[in-house]
Image 1 (cartoon, one colour):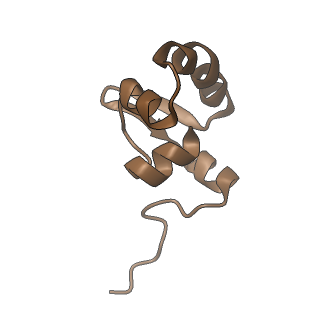
Image 2: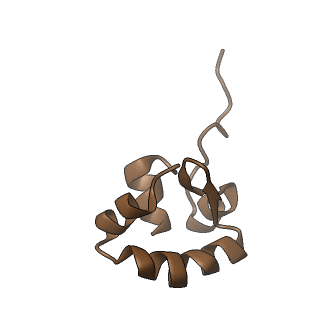
Image 3: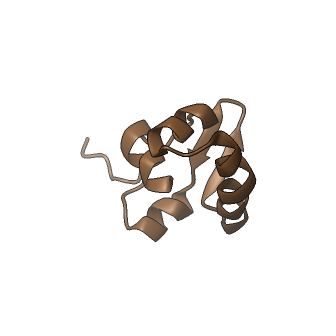
Length: 73
């Protein structure tokens, strides 16, 4: 789920039903089983605009966090 949000939706925010469709899982399963664990671990946050992956999740997955690259100019 985290990889999906990062790779397909640039880390979010993205709606739950959109995530469910992208990962071929029921929205209820994501909201009641997977999402609470990811939120407790600090990998996912709920925002008014949708679910968003945290910087901690990027680090855990070994991916670059957007905006963390130094600007050249």
